[in-house]
Image (spheres, rainbow, N blue to C red):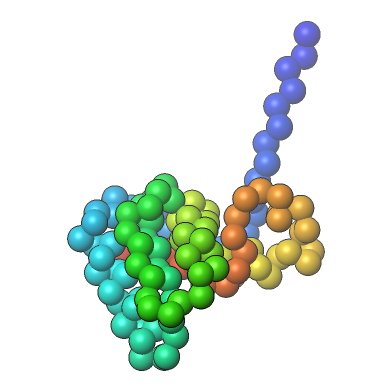
Length: 119
């Protein structure tokens, strides 16, 4: 009787920060307000999703006249950035060399950013 174990590693040259403290609703609203202000200054209509360190939704806001596809994409990008502790652009650049990456449920569109609190 043999036991076979498989270990899959997502390799990256990036140094991953610790997950850190939980994100509460007040903090999530401040993060979203900063993102909306930045988008407004640049003339972008965006959807903003803020998730906790495990990728669970804490706060969501969609600016007027934002394309409806952005609603789903913003949540997926936020979840991916939080759960893998890296920007979604880190995945986007690897699709060509590692096409199997599209099968494990991450959003690879640039724009999902992990938010790190300074201590």
